[in-house]
Image 1 (spheres, rainbow, N blue to C red):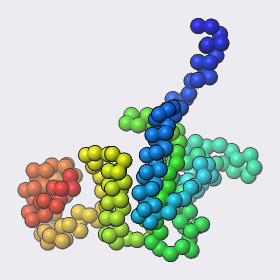
Image 2 (image 1 turned 90 degrees about the horizontal axis):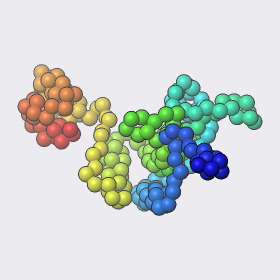
Image 3 (image 1 turned 180 degrees about the vertical axis):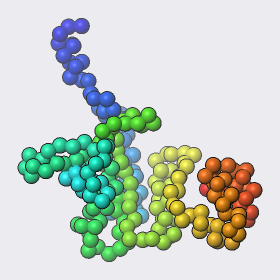
Image 4 (image 1 turned 135 degrees about the vertical axis):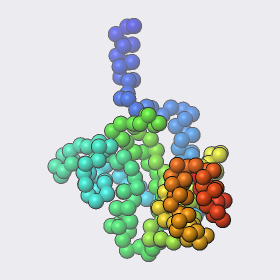
Length: 218
């Protein structure tokens, strides 16, 4: 290889987990993001655009600055440490509680942008990727949970996602179903154990009238 070719190959090399967006993939990704944002907007979610970089103590819950996933750099103007966002959710929460603190609740916000992590994972080795989402702030009813889940399902179906599976991380969900079906206390412990094991047969045997609802959650 000639020296000029070797130098060009060196300059084209990117750090692990980072890559250039090339045609037609870059255009496809942009179109997908805009379709998702368009669906969110149609349902009343207003878009916000947090900065890519901000002071590191605002990028983590509780104001802590020990997150190993955040790239850090010194701001030459303020001489304070800054961080490159690894997740936009905490930024949207900051905007809602500061810039939009006076807006009526519930507050419906959407967002899209790139995030950067210190390292990838086995399932997702990329360190830079697009994050698109919504936040429904100031509504704690079950209807609010249903709204967000249905919006996510409709938006993903709209961009062609098939055989969609949604994980619900709601600790009160199982107790609420148990109470709604009036299951006796002695039945609840083995039922919870079966759910934790994701044992469909044991759930069906222990859940009684709630078998269909609880089995469907798995």
